[in-house]
Image (cartoon, rainbow over all chains, first blue to last red; front, side, top):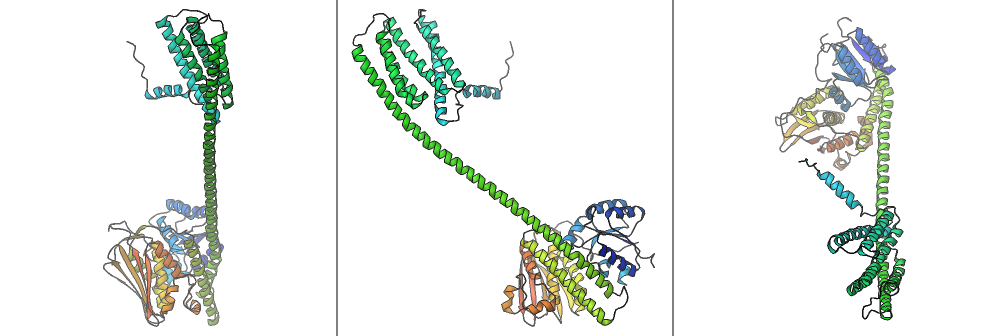
Length: 124
Length: 491
C-alpha cells in the first residue's frame, strides 16, 4: 500500500508543524520526508523525487519563494506538485502564492483535510 | 581668402556677458552696491567720452601740444579713470568714488584753465556749468555726508582756477570775483544741500525696501522650516505606522503558530491517530478544537480589521470569474452546511458576467464571511447564493438564509465592529462580531456596497453590489484556486 501512495515532503522550521505532519502522514501510511531548512530540502530533492513538496513561506535560511525557484529547477515539472504553506494563511496569501507560481497551498493548522485535495488516500 | 572662423551664438552671448559683467556691482551691501554700480557705469561712460573727444582733437581740431592742452587733459582724465576702475575692481568703492569725483573736478578745472588760456568766453561759461555736475555725481558715488564737502570743494577750486591761478590776463566782462564767487558758492552749496536731502530720502526708501525684503526672506525661511518639520513629522509617522504594521504581522504570526500546533495536535487526538479516547474525553477535545478555532478566527479578524483601518490593505485589480469564484466558495463551505443539515445552493443568472476586474482574495473573503454567517445563524432550511449582472457596469451576489433574522432596530449596527445583535449570540454562534465590519470596509474599498433585508424568524438576505471594473469582455485567464481547483495526481 505504501508504494501506491504518493510521497510527500515538507520543508518547515516549526517543530510542531513537522511533528503534526509526521503523525498525519504515518497515520495515513503516506511515505514522506521532512526537512527543517530550504538548504536541507534542496539537498534531499537532488537525490529523491517526491510527488508533492510543501514549502513553508517563512524559512530561516531563504524565503519560500526563492526555495520554489530552486526546487522548480531540480524537479520534474510534470510529476511534482510544489505547494506553499504558512501560518499567515489568508485568502490574500492564498492568491498571492498562486501568482508566484506555486501549484497550490496548504493552509495551517495542518489537519487531515488540509491535504485532502492533494493526497487522495488521506480521505480514507 | 581666409575662412571666417564661425562664431557661435553661445560664444557671442558669452562675449556680451563678459562685457556687461563689468557693470554688475560685486558688493553685497545694497547701499554700497548702488554706488558701486553707478561708479562702474560712470567710469565706463567717461572713458568712452574721453576717448571719443581725444580722437576728435587728434583728427579734427589738431590742437597744439602744450602742458595745459586738450591732449594732456584727456590723458590725465584717462589715467584717473583707469586708477578709479582699478580701485573699484579691488572693491574699494569709497576711494573709487572719490577718484571719480576728483577726476570730474579736475576736468571742470581744466576747462577753465583751457578757456582762460585760449581766451574763450564761451569756454568759461561752459566750465561753470560743468562744476554744477560735480555735486550731482558726488550724490551718486559717495556716502551722503560727503556731498556738501564736495560742493564746497568744487566752489573753492572754481574760485582758485578762475581768479587766482596764473593763466594770462584774459577776463570776460561781467565775470568778477566779487560777483562770481558768492553766486557759485551759493549755487553749488545749495545744490549739494538739496541733493543731500534727496539722497536721505532715497536711502530711507531703500532701507524700508530692504527691511521688507528681509522680512520676506525670514517669512520664506520660516515657511521652509515649517515644511521641513512637517516632512520630518510625516516620515516619522509613516515609520511608526510601518513599525506598527510589522509588529501586528509579527505578533499575529507569533500568536498563530502555537495555536496552529494546538489545533493540529488536538485534531490528531480527535482523529484517533494516537489511540482511542472515551466519549467524554473526545467531547472535551472537540471543545478545545472549537475554542481554538474561534481564537484563530478572532486573531485573523482583528489583524485584518486593523490592517484595513490603517489603510495597509491594497485592493488588487486582476481578471476574475465571478461564476468560478462563487462555485468554488460554495463547494468549500458545503461540508460546513451539511454538518448542520442545511442545504447550500448557488443560482447563477445568465446575466452574470464571465469576467470582471477585481480582487479575487477579497471578493472570496466577503463571500465566505457572508455564507458562513448565514450557516451559523440558520438552524433549519437552506442557504442560497444568487448572482447576476446588473445594467450599467455592476454585478451583484446575494446570500439568503432561513435563519433567525435580525430585528429592524439592530440592522444599523450589524456592520459596526465588535457589535452583534445579542452578545449571547457571539457565544452561541461562534462569531467574532468583526466579520460584517470587515466585509463592509472591504466592499467599500472595492467601490461596491452591501445591503441587508431581514425579518425576524424568517431569515436574512445580504446583497453585495460590485463594479465590473471593465467594459471589455475579453480578459485573460482567471487565477486557479486550489485546493478546490481539481488537480489529480498521477504518481
